[in-house]
Image (cartoon, rainbow over all chains, first blue to last red; front, side, top):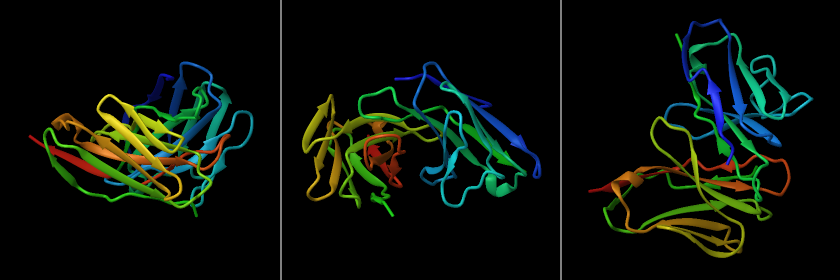
Length: 115
Length: 112
């Protein structure tokens, strides 16, 4: 399986600021996804990061709040903009495309606390 | 709306017993099915996937799929305290570049 790293692993930010999370994969992958996991909850898909085009956002998530870049097949960023305490969550990068059944693998996550 | 349903638990089993985790899905066209284990404070880890009806065994884990009943399960034999975690069921609706749909997870507690 692909080795996925995320930076930062955690951060504490003030409301109104923005944080950019990086996701790096050690091999080229077809698909990259960004998820959010709020405390005690399951995974919520934010968007699919498309290489060379705009990300595809799920209902309830918008580009102005969560801009995403994917400049190549091994790297993506997610920015959480104009943060509020409700954005406190774990943000997870996930990739697929290397396995026979499109299985998805997850990065270690970024734990974000907004004060 | 494609849905994946799991009992949230907690499911408590004694050490050495068989833990049975269940999942149902709404999209009859779903093709691939995955089980992830998530320890508290960690990211999900893929432990099993299955795509055809029947059983698939890997060590102490057995995944079972019944497409007619839209039901997938995970059996953990000889449960250990280290198996205590949340288990997420995920379904891929069709082949190609679509993300998995996740259930809310079942919390398993193995009591020593």
